[in-house]
Length: 272
Image 1 (tube, helix red, strand yellow):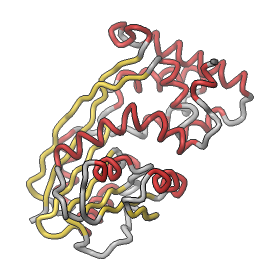
Image 2 (cartoon, helix red, strand yellow):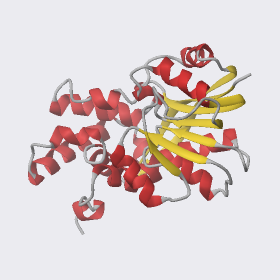
Image 3 (cartoon, helix red, strand yellow):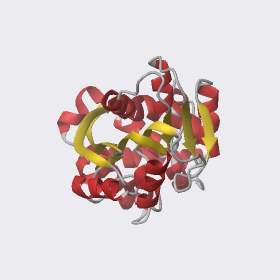
C-alpha cells in the first residue's frame, strides 16, 4: 500500500478534514471544552462555527438530551456533519449574524473558530445575544503559532519552498495576542465571570509526512498545490515534510511519529 493509498485521497477536503484532522486534533479540544462546560441534560446548546460538527456530536454521544444546534458558514462542512449525525440540527449561517432569536440558548460553544471571524467583537456580541440570562460560553482558540512547534515548523517550510505568502492561511489559524486580550474581548461583549486559561494538549500523527500531507490536501491550503500533477504534488509534500523534521526537536519524532504540544486559550464565561 502506498502512502497515497493509505490516505484515501479520493474524497473532498471536508471529508478528509473529518477523517484525519478531527480524530487527531479537534476531538481532543472538543472533549476538553465539554469537560469544562459540562452542559446539563435539558439545556439548549449552540455550537458556533461547528465545521463538521465534532463538538455537538461529542455532546450527543455523551447522552445529552435537549436542544442541540450547530451553525457554520461552510455548506460543504455542514454536509459532512449532517451525514455523520441526525441528533443535531445543522444550520448554515454567519457567526456575525446568528440566525437565531435572542435568548434562545443556555450554552454557547465555539471551538477553534474565533480566529477566523473577520469581526471578532461582533461574533462575541452575537454569542451573548443568543444566550439566556446566566447562560454560559465555552470557547477555545489557538495561541501564537510559535507555541505549537509543528505548526511553526510547517509555516517556515512552506515559506521556504512555496514562497513567503504561502503560509498566510496556516498562520491565520493562530492569534498573535495574549490571553488577557482575549479575556478583554469577551468582557466587552457583555460577559462577566470570565476565566481564560492557557492550555496545552499533546497532538500526535503517524508521521511528519502524514501531518504535512493532511495540511496540504484536507484544508484550504490544498489550493497551494492545485496546479500541480500528482508526481509534483508528492515531491513538494515530501520536501516540506523533510524540512519540518529538520526543524523539530528529536523528542517529538520518536518511533517515526510526530507528537507535539499544541497551545490554545480556553475561555469559560457567563452572563449576568
